[in-house]
Length: 498
Ligand SMILES: Cc1cc2nc3c(=O)[nH]c(=O)nc-3n(C[C@H](O)[C@H](O)[C@H](O)COP(=O)(O)OP(=O)(O)OC[C@H]3O[C@@H](n4cnc5c(N)ncnc54)[C@H](O)[C@@H]3O)c2cc1C
Image (cartoon, rainbow, N blue to C red):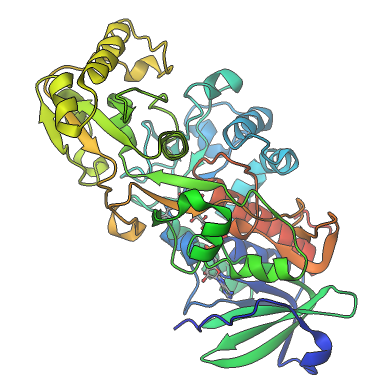
């Protein structure tokens, strides 16, 4: 059982502590994907490494996730599936899709060393199958090793040469559990001292205002750990902390949460209390409650009955547009032919909520202006006949005139992902936070002057990683493991580059 939070997040001073209960070289806080990667690299650097995790075992949100990891630049899986890719094209896509003002320097490193990171994952036992899932999806109901993340949709197909970069561990559906099982097995083999049920509450500052260790609680009892070389915070985001959401990301309040329930932001707060700067705290991934294959074959409309985005793009970008530009007042419209074309396993149990013989009648049933929806479908069909979508630029592959009977699907009604996904229903979207601590490429946590706080490192969703505002799937497990490795290495005393 996880210990209860301690009220104050303010750092303690080494003088108050006297002697520490435990000592190590590198101390990693939080055992999700970023923590596992940091611990592995710290241990590989020869540092004595300890991991403290509040839960009873490893995993975090990483273990609940789809397992998609954003990798490219010409990985063996891309090549085996017949795709050519380069770090330059990968970086161009990421800069556009994760922007505006995505982290240029981090993206540059990430794209340049992405093939090496793929090799690192496979060396640590993460398997990928050389086959492509070729349709927009949250998590494909298959074990295909590769999927698109919107690279082949407008406007990204005009910005960078498209190549699929969503890499999936070989598991049917959600692959996060397999990813974490393999990384945890590697952590055990590396003789990292992993301690569970240990909730870190405060940082301990040394004489130089650098971080010297932490205070933690286990079963109600406080203990202290000295970190001779550095502390790495890999504690995840803050979607489970209502107060932080209200302060930084009010548009995410009241929505479902994509997390293991432990994303309470404590790691971010402890670092802020020690002087750390934060970045992009209002940004969020919006897992809108719809099946991507349904909107690709049909359309999504707003409360005025109008389309507002190309429906074949990455569904999180549809979610951001729906929440931030349409107030989540959106409906999925599809015809029978489109619905029937979607394999049962891909539907996640989502069914039409209203059916009618014409767009006008359908609009009346769901409370949209009938003439507007009639006109939207008429314009869509007129151009779809010619394989064109001048309004929203959906790819011709998904364009076909829609015909009766027409169905509407309520996004507000929500949906249930397969059980292991833990996605809540009934709120229109499940979200997690993207912003966090401001770090260098090598994981050093920066203060308000832009200077590194001695002894403090961070990675994963506790930090602002590759992203500013935009998000595509795979970039969390991707930047968590990638920059986790860098942070572990740097905390051990190396230059950070594995
Ligand atoms: C259903 C779902 C599907 C997803 N699918 C994908 C996907 O396919 N691809 C992708 O890239 N992302 C996906 N994500 C997002 C992704 O899983 C997370 O953003 C990512 O796992 C974060 O990794 P992390 O290591 O930073 O944090 P986590 O994996 O959450 O690990 C943080 C750990 O820190 C521990 N912790 C927190 N505070 C403390 C403390 N004070 N003391 C001690 N321990 C502490 C927590 O218990 C937790 O174990 C998905 C998320 C969900 C929920």
